[in-house]
Length: 301
Ligand SMILES: *[C@@H]1O[C@H](CO)[C@@H](O)[C@H](O)[C@H]1NC(C)=O
Ligand SMILES: *[C@@H]1O[C@H](CO)[C@@H](O)[C@H](O)[C@H]1NC(C)=O
Image (cartoon, rainbow, N blue to C red; front, side, top):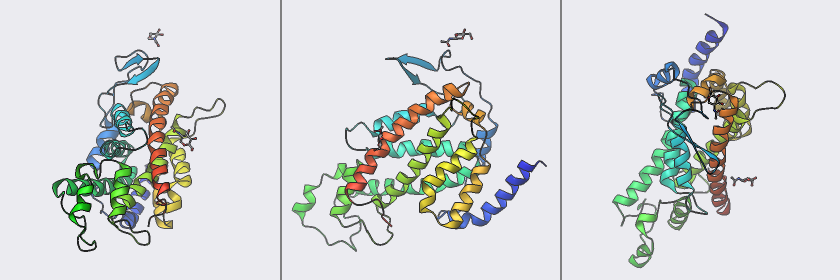
């Protein structure tokens, strides 16, 4: 047993111990999917030559990468759809982007896959709020806490558009007094803030993996992920969670794994694909940030 696999084993044991502190949703992560992701050897497709790529308006259009559960092309199209509205973020494609990012994290191995469980819990909360509104257009979300509004006021809100976008969600939850600025609740806004912070971490990580230094050695994805984490999510996590997360990043695959994951051959191609993703993520991130900031929601408990 090599040093690396011993370290990995130690991490598994530690994570099982720390897992309950980390996750609210238990430890039912999908080993199967992760192992499949690891073992699946994909045919390499040359970006600038293969059938996967077409060039439109001088920019690369990324197409399906065979054999992968995570599809970078799908992520890009969801992100693009999320920012279709000029100054808002549409929630349905935003959450669909997260579905794809969860697959990305699960492809990085069981350790990082653990973190994605927390994300799935969050996307589920927002989806449930949205579908509750759709099915019960006349109902307040929490009638016990909220005074019933009169019919005229209720009629003023267009039901189908309540959870359509980040801004409409903020608007409707504020109006109904669902956002608690002092204690933790399961409001959509509070939940979105958690996703929003995690998005910054992934954006920074991908940005670092895309970065190709002119001189010097490329750093390992594991290092880069840790650095990105320390600059972002770590600021919001407790000591235990930070230790567990940093251990999880040690077991992250090498850079060549990322080539296979998005069907590229070398760092230049990886950089090209990831830069596109980072820009799309940044657009969505910036708009969400502005909307949350405008409503004083960057520190919701
Ligand atoms: C396509 O592949 C061929 C042979 O591998 C190479 O000579 C050519 O430069 C490639 N084309 C592009 C656009 O990269
Ligand atoms: C996002 O915001 C940052 C900081 O305000 C800015 O530098 C960057 O250009 C913005 N990116 C996009 C894609 O809008």
